[in-house]
Each structure stands twice: as structure tokens, then as C-alpha cells.
Image (cartoon, rainbow over all chains, first blue to last red; front, side, top):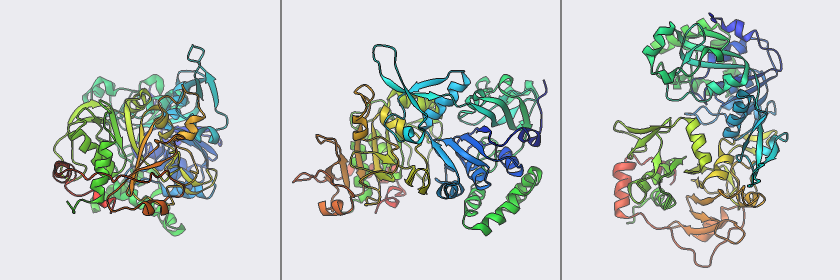
Length: 285
Length: 252
């Protein structure tokens, strides 16, 4: 089945208050074209689950996020995201902080339809105080160890970005790490995959070995070709992180005027215009 | 050897901190720990495994910055494998701490209340899982009352008082081995597992440490001095591991 769709159609499925998952890690292979599309939409009060990068900063700055569930927010080459920091320091966003392994466990439990998965990670830490709904479970075996019963983290919608895909929803990552994108898809009711390029199914293996075909079409409801769709995060081997752009992004947190300038130039435009401007900027440099 | 830098002393102390670890993954945050781990691997701990900071394990030792030869990869190690590995225990991590307290509780998540922080930092990352699963040490390059605090605002890495409240089985893999700062080396070799001043870096006084620490340390009447790196170690640091003096940029 041809699952090709558009950013607008995918984001139009979002409703206020939904729980969404965003793939990638930090400032790496993030579905940023989707993030930009969400910024253009009226949706709000989202619960956002992600290994956080600039997706978090942008969505928080735009007032889209009610609650963040994550282990961290970082831009990698720049340790902290200033927009996320500002939102938190203003008390605007709740941060349901988890150990990053607990977070994986919650998504994985959802993906394999278990109510929880046990883990030692988190015991003794503030994760239990920040997330008072967490409960312990005692091993039924002789060890009788008490562990955290990490509850399934179910997503209404997941968004991931791959290097290549076919029209049916088979996806391929060509970088060094898939992060937890497959688990994100597993945990979600609706799954959208953007990609650098849609190719014929028979062409997928030209790009990489069979192990790179980690997303299969059962895991995806919609495919969107978005060249440059991870910009300004990295998407190797197609492109690295746009460090100069990322510096401009962080500088836009300096004051309201800087933010308005950044927003007018890069966010109040269509995805096609955004990509054209990125190309023009690269040529100029 | 009067020209030994403080960073080089710290790197040797961090190297010593890996003694006896064997064939485990070392993960380091900060320039000085990155130098110290490489020094350990090139001297007394050749079996240590290190990542390229992305998703692979690298054979041999690469310099921490500057010109590197093409790495020889020995294994693929994406984040998911690191998560599995750290719960298995075959890892020793050296993390940094925005706050650390007398029992070794660590915070790099937020300063102030978690609900509305005065300063939002990176988040707890893997600290809870690391500290309950395998040996953990800390590196603090700017020892002060702002980071050696009586009480951390968010417990990311769990310390000995928190571990003591868990069952023996739950805490059996918990070990905060040492805290290395720009002023000295600290451990928890006390009856109630409060932080102890284990050694002072050359040129640092007990008073320097006390006036920069926001809690009462256990201090013996005769505190040893952190050893100087040997001539061989200095040559490795300066010629092979850190020719650009990356570590010296982190600590004066």
C-alpha cells in the first residue's frame, strides 16, 4: 500500500492534549520538518516523549508542550538548549524526568503490550519523587528483590526520520545508530516516518546492508519525503549537524527581539522555503 | 618536576582510579577524565574498552583532540547496547556533577526546585541507572561551595545514604568509587560512608579544601599528597594522549 502523505496531513491528525513521541537523540536525526509543521499548527498542550534535542526547545518556546517525559535535553555540541531552559525556569513546562534507561523500558513495554517492565534503575533517585505514579514490584522468585515497575509509555502518535524509505513504509537508517526510533513506532497508535529520499523497494539495499532496514511497513502509517528534514540536526551520511545554524538557534534565546527575528526568518515560512533558504545560506558561506 | 600541571596530576589520579577494573567499558565526561582513562589504558589497564563517543568501540588509544589517525573499530556500540551493558555492570563511568553532597549524591538536572528550577540543567540522563548498576566516579574541575553542597537539589546519581535505605540486594552493585576535583581526591572509606579527603593535590592545603566545601568532610590528621605523574606518564600525556593540552584548558 502506498502510504505517502504530507507533513500537513500528518500533523492535522494531532489533537490538543495528545501524547507524541519524537525519534532521534539530542541533536541527531530528529524529524525537524515535522517539528516545524507542528509549530505552524494550532495544536497545544502536548505531552512530549523524546530523547530530547532542539525538538523540545522549539516546541516549548512555541507553547506547544504541557509536559515533557524524557531523561535529558541536549544539543550535543552545545550541552543545554536555552529555549527549554527558559520554559522550565518560567515554570511553563512540567518535566517528568526519568533515567534514560527507564524511559526506554517504558516505550518498550508499550511496544510489546506489557503493563510494565521491571528495572533497578531509578531506585533511590529523585525519579521516584518526580514521578509519584511509579510503583515497585517484588520479584516472585527466591531473590524477592523489589524493583521499579516501569509503566508502559503509550504514544498517540510517533514521528521518526530515516535516511531512506520506500512508499510502503519500509525505512532505512544509514547512520551509526537507530537510537530508539523502532521502539517509538512500537509504542504508538499512529506512526509517521519522514525520510531524506523515497526510493523503490528494490533500491533500498543499494544504500546499505540488510541490517539497516530496521523499520518495516507494519511499523508505519504514513511516509513523507522531506529532503533536509532533519536539519539542523545531523543526519549522516546525508549531512552533518549545521553547527552555525544551531548557534543561531541558541542565540535566538537571548531576548524577544532575537527570537522574533529567528522565527520570522526560519519558522514563519513553509518547509520548501525553509529548505531553499538553508541551501542559499550554505552557498553564501 | 616542577612544571607538572594540576590537570596532569588529576589525570594520573583518574588513571589510578581504574586500577583493577579489567575488561570493562570506560565512559568519561570531561577533558581530564578522557586523558586519565587513556593513560590507564596505555599503562596498567590495557584491557579497558572505550567508545569513539558515537556508536563504536575503538581499538588502541586515540588522542583526545587534534590530529587523529583513522580509528580501528573493534565493535559496534549504539546507545541501546550501552544501556544493556551498563545494567550488566561491565562499566565504570566518570561523570561530572553540578552538585555533589557528602554521601556522593549527584545532581546535574536542575538547581532549585524540580517543579520550577532556578537553573534547568541537562536532566538526570542515565545517572540513576549507572549508580545502581556499576562503579561510578565523579570529576569536578572547579571545586567550590556551589558544587560540593550539603544537599543536592535533585538526586540523579544516588549516594551512600540513599543506597543504605535500599535492601542489600537492591544496592549490591552500588559503588561510588572516588570523587576527583581540581583540589584533591575524595572517597567514602568511612564507617558511615561520608566523603573523606583521601589526598590533596600538590600545592593545595586542607584549608583550601575546607573553605571550598559546603559540608563537613572527614579529614585525617595526616592527609597524603596526590602522587605526581611519572616521567613516562607525562611523556604519554604530552606526546600521545593530549598534545594540544586540552586537559590544561579545563583546570588551571
